[in-house]
Length: 125
Image 1 (cartoon, helix red, strand yellow):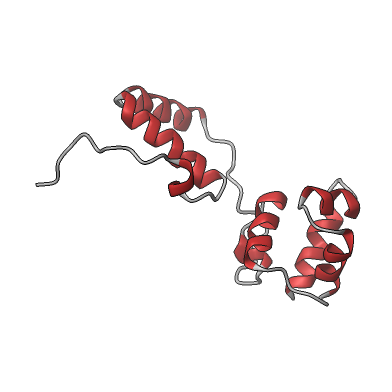
Image 2: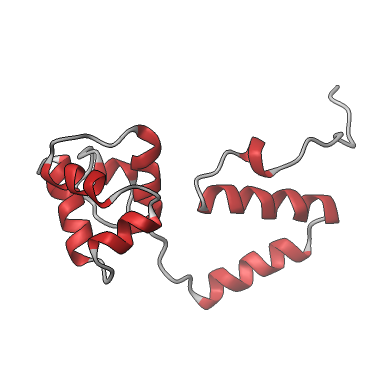
């Protein structure tokens, strides 16, 4: 399946129409139409934005993998409790770093953009 077919499939199964999807992606409906028909290929930033928007992996859009979904499944109660216990055991600074790191992972955002520069309270030996 070509990239255009994958994008067309994602647009077709989405509850919003093409105009709304294009608006959400900050592109024109014509640009989205060009991606769907294969007249144009989205740049890397647009592939990332589409992956986030449609909740699939960029690899799926780029035809590297056949897996449609790369979204997390609902964690079990045991997993949630383990995560909560881990979080409670952290120092305040570790919690901040952990939260910022998780935000970056979930939103495909560079940690450098999310986590402000801070002095590290420990020395490397």
